[in-house]
Figure: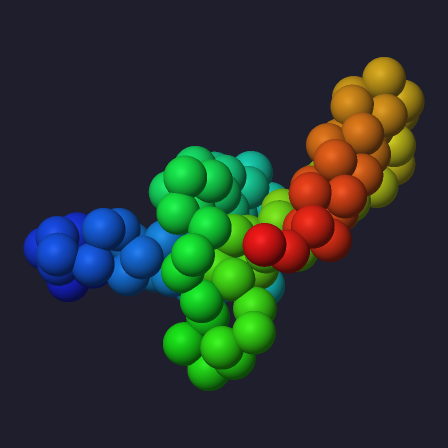
Length: 108
């Protein structure tokens, strides 16, 4: 992540990709709040830069990728909230997951 912060001339794409990778690590460790923070940061960086493409797939934008990851993390948080007896929080996360999925299906 520190290297990504130092690269400034790519407009933030490397920072966005680093955030996704950090988020995936947190998610794999079951640290969903931390994963969400990283995925939301990636989303913020890509929201205004929808022309960035995932480096290993020139047909998928980094923004689309961020939406897919957000959808997955929001869904896991919704399930966790429901398991913890918080149905209102669960519904809020499910709505966020739905919105992320819907936005992710719209490719420029």
